[in-house]
Image (cartoon, rainbow, N blue to C red; front, top):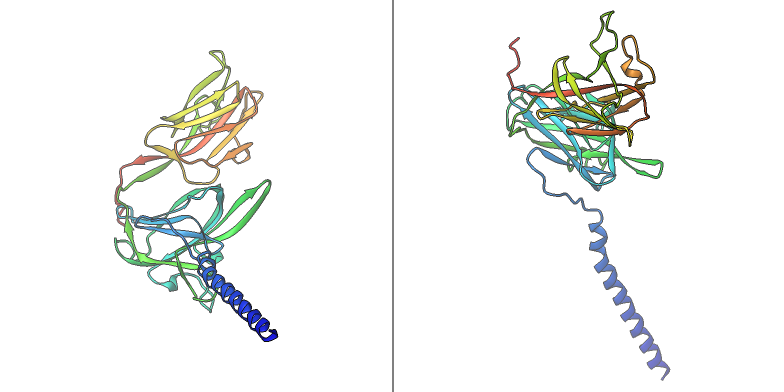
Length: 323
């Protein structure tokens, strides 16, 4: 009887061990799946951006404008809550064009194109196409690095993100590169930068200087006042509306105009009395970075406001001048 009890105990233990082993085997693939990079379907010229190695946050787009001979590069965040604060970019016909350590790891701080991003979800810029990358389907190597993060209450948690899926050094740093053939833009767009001001009175009417203007929001016609946004001294590129009830100032651009893709493309300063002298735009109280065709901002109530906007106008694409 004692032997039977021992055998029965061993049989139960064996069954439990087999059951646990089966559960562990079944769980193993699920655990590995957590490390797999999941990427939505992207278009030609778009490459996934991963934060912290495996978290998809958006994509980087690289396309050639055949007429201007420039590469248009756009970092685009698609996942909710994430924003960008810095970017670093390098591109060439082979991997040697990317600044790297002796071990082959990329060095973002030495990339030729870099700068800050003001907590935005889209950031675009143009760079001259390197030699032999000025035609469609030309093979290239690129490194697209960006610092991303999320706000939790008042704390910003930053992470590194890289474009592409292939590591520079397999098994080393997880930094990834983009290796592909140049995609040309389907719908060529060319834009020309302009300075714009809300229509009004000149800051410096008698002493020359800039054509900067400030607006007198007197509200004699009602609690909502609208003025033109004027670019290049004479072109109406949109409107600026101030709502007295909410103290909300809204800038809306006309068709074929956009906010220039640079940091602090909107600068606003309020005054209790009429300002004089050329304005110190860099010292304006409100600085914001806008994209698209409209932007609203809450401001304190003032009688006079200077509203400065960096804009771009869509123009005909022309080949670069022959040197």
